[in-house]
Amino acid sequence: MSGDLMAIRDDFPILQREVNGRSLIYFDNAATTQKPKVVIDAMTDYYQSMNANVHRAVHTLAGESTEAYESCRENLRKWFSAEKVIFTSGTTEAINLAAHAWGKHNLNKGDVVLLTEMEHHSDIVPWQMLSREIGVELRYVPVAEDHTLDMELLRASMEGVKLVCFVHTSNVLGARNPVEEIVSISKKHGAKVLIDAAQAVPHSRIDFTSMNIDFLACSAHKMCGPTGIGCLLVSPGTFLEMEPFMGGGDMIETVTLEGSTYQKNEHKFEAGTPKIAEAVGWDAAINWLSKIDLQFEHERLLDMARHTANRLRAIPGMTVFGQHTDGDSAVVSFIHDKVHPEDMARLLDARGIALRTGHHCAQPLMEKLGVNGTLRASFYLYNTQEEVETMLSTIESIVERFS
Amino acid sequence: MNDTPSLEELVEEFSEIDDAMERLELLMDFADEVDELTLDEWSDDNLVRGCQSQAHIVVENREGLVHTRAAADAKIVQGLMGILSVVMNGKSPAFVLSLTPQFAIDMGILNSLTPSRSNGFRTMFDMIQSEVKEKF
Image 1 (spheres, rainbow over the protein chains, first blue to last red):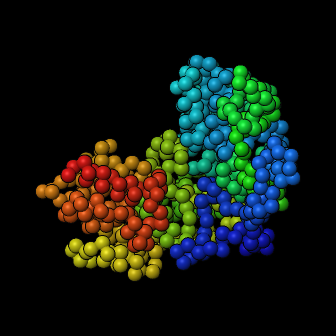
Image 2: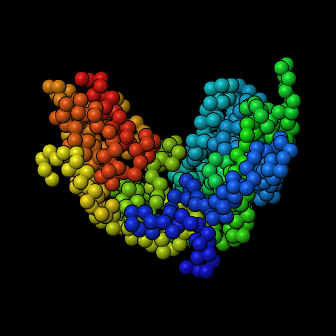
Image 3: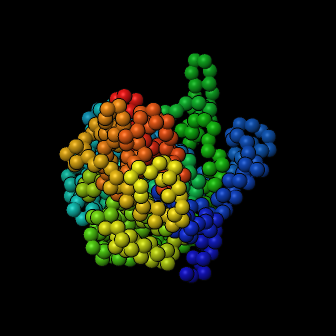
């Protein structure tokens, strides 16, 4: 293990714990990443030294907490090269916000929203709800035999499309979609673009402005930040087309009994007391991540995923999904024809190894792959090759013992 | 194992095993204790909803006593069903309704009983008690 990797691991207190008498090996990073001590400390310090509600009161604590909260937004603006950063509870709420605040007011009956079969439920259900409400048509780009998006069918599906929503990087396959090509096709047809970047932001720097898209949704907790906070990035022009869908404190300018006027900035979409401690934690996570060479780590982790996929493919009865080509994220989904994924996951847990099992909130993709669920190992910055070898030899022995 | 071990004996048997994988292995042995539903009996009506594996349970009233029949594609899940069968089959409805699912934690075979997508056991347990209330 390199000195850098040891230093990274030292920043994560949870890696010291044992599960079922073994050192924890955490390979469920696509669900949520662990938190470095600086994030935990920042949130504790916020509550211990400056807790107050933001944006209103003139006292010292309120001023400090407002600064801390808005500092996160400023940090995110720089991190993502984005002008408009609306805080949400996570990727799911961000997509729901786009559907309600923009879709409901700018799409009409018969307009087409183009999705893909690879989407997380978070990028399917809000649009289904909108479809029921205002009658937009939903169209899905199929996943081809090689588990990539069928780009020919995407091109052929563009008629009448007003909004294209797709996942940047699949949470099941790790596949990075041809983002630039899809955006180019969409823009050529005059469609807006929303990208679900939940799985992309932990592994790479995203430049929202240069992507020429309209919306990008992501969560803090998949990039070392706390749960309960995420954001919707919106292009300045599209931002002006959005109407608030939640009313109340923090989003108003003036309220009379006859009516209200709203804030003009992002606060317009952040009704209620915001997620202040979470923003403080996310700010700390971004600062911590900014010291990591993400490109180097991306390649290291993808190599681990490739090695894992190859070793698993050598086990009789094992099916491994995904291509693990350059740009993909370090996610390996697999199933064995004799050992049920749930059995395998519980047996691995008995050895302290945490993997995800199930449909990964992507049931249409599971149907396409012809399975009810998979096991998924997803790697992140603090994972080591030694941990991978332990997981692989444990899987090999489980298959030998229980199949 | 005895033909009809008590719940307390089962809890003791499991909790005496230090190694978590060996506990799961013993749990899998209990899969054979299930009065198994055949594949063509699997239906939406007897599906354990929210379970990650395909799991099915029916509760029958056999001369006033509870009898469960079940099946699952995951062996550990069927093992959990086996434990429930051993504990509940041939018992009075009052006894079955007096049980709580806590024993699965005491045995060291589950770490959570919250009904959620990851935990079909709680759903199975609740489903059996609900059917007992309905059918007796």
